[in-house]
Image 1 (tube, helix red, strand yellow):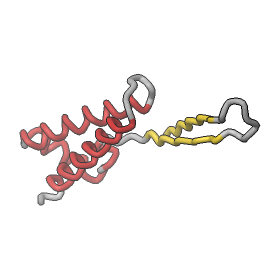
Image 2: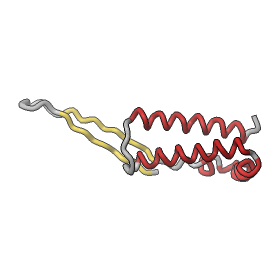
Image 3: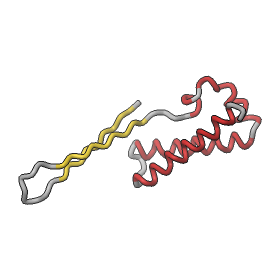
Amino acid sequence: MTTIIYINAFCQPETTAPAIVLIKTINMEKHDLLHEFPEYREKIHELKTSNQHFRKLFDEYHEVDHDIHRIEHGAEATTDEVLNGLRIKRVQLKDNLYKQLQGL
């Protein structure tokens, strides 16, 4: 896991008031499905080859995860709103994939 800490200091010009410091921490963890669900490694492989819908969700999940990592590592700039939207989409895809892995 990699942690990046962003620190921004704000102060009013022409004052001696101390600066306001905002600290934003981003934890960059691997979220690929094999890392998230190691107990389902064989089932993931089986469903990727036999279930077209699972494969589509699997590919979309990894594409979104890759986009998130590019943003978190600074390779691509975006707003917090866009990044949070991608994170929500990743969670929704992961939930759907997990249900299929459980046979629900």
